[in-house]
Image (tube, rainbow, N blue to C red; front, side):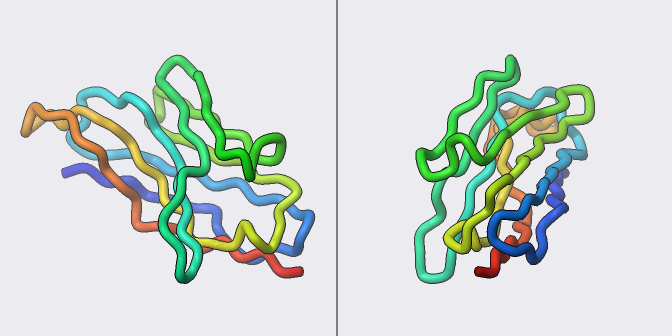
Length: 121
């Protein structure tokens, strides 16, 4: 089995910072792209940022210049440093990873369980 476990969410005041992390574990042969998505109440899940194995990143316009995605390939972990947080960043944040699971010998996209980020004004 494969698990993606997020941590680092919480409550912060506007203008503050948080760092999320997400570690993949289990019967993993290889990890490709990893990313962060978020879903606010009553809204669809949206892309926040993605990063390739080589470190190429992509951001939603709403977080450019404030959020930074990074990864540690050896630890199969992706991070999201969030600075200058705004109330509109409030959402459940989910990590995902495209990875090759050893037992099934298949590439699939896996999701974490989500972590709540709340930004107060």
